[in-house]
Length: 305
Image (cartoon, rainbow, N blue to C red):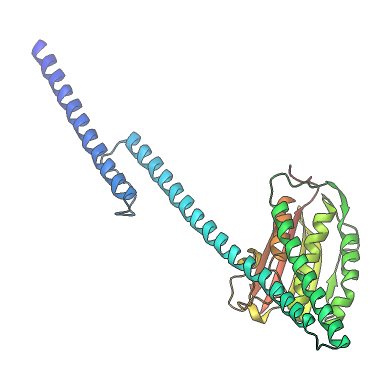
């Protein structure tokens, strides 16, 4: 009996030592895999050859952490690229009107100009100066909106009445473009609990963008959909065919790569930032040659703190 017990103990000890040796080898193998991954020698995640639940859980968490590191690095590179692009675009957008102003000032300094030419040049200078002022105001506003302590005043807001008021203000702008928008609003007022000035700015920025770039028919509708209030603006946008419309909300993005001095490219970015602050969403969809802007607000909810 004693001999059998001794044999069993030796067998158990041998199995334990074998198991420990296999665990040590597997840990060394995992360490080598992690080293190769960290050295960028391979992009392969850690795999476990030895069946052991705890080792598999460890490998899963290491792979998850590695994935988070890769995502963070990609995000850092993207932000760095966007920052460089933003600096270049800011420089371009400021330099364009400023160069024009300096050019007209030189013309004003000429002794041979007539009074009529002087009035014309002064008008050009004023126009470019106002454009530069508006541009700088947009830069400042976007930086304020995206700050963590940007204040929003929550109040009960009648959206149907507000939309009607804003659309009346754009009547002349649409009329000058020869556009008669098709407007569909609910008969009863739809109420939100949000910031009126933020909502007004979002809608105005979207309509300004529509007036500038729309061709043909424009459809504007507002309605309740389940637990949200949805504003939809649809217009023809042939210039955007085949484009990634999600880029429309990026700072300084313009579909025109020559970057016309008529647009800072900040209006839609400001609108999206304000929607995020209000706990809503702003998205763009492109169906053929038609661009659809979709604003969604949650009903019966307060602005997030």
